[in-house]
Image (cartoon, rainbow, N blue to C red; front, side):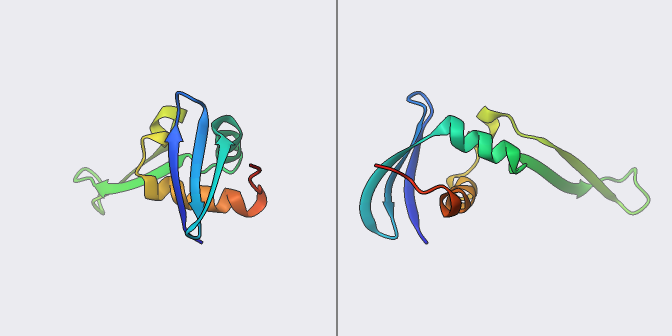
Length: 93
């Protein structure tokens, strides 16, 4: 499934322009999508890095992204979550 979308934070919507190359504009509520992201813990991150103070040289950082941090992510990362969301939440025109 492919999807073309734009996040319009100011308007509070995610504008879906097309799904699978068919023009079918739909607007989703950012708040509903964000609630789903939080419930499914898709706003968490874990990063590995080199840490010379550790015996094996491995350091790790983890945490939770805020609303603003999540929507500042690259579109491809949001697209993956949006596609998963659309599997169970059918958009209405």
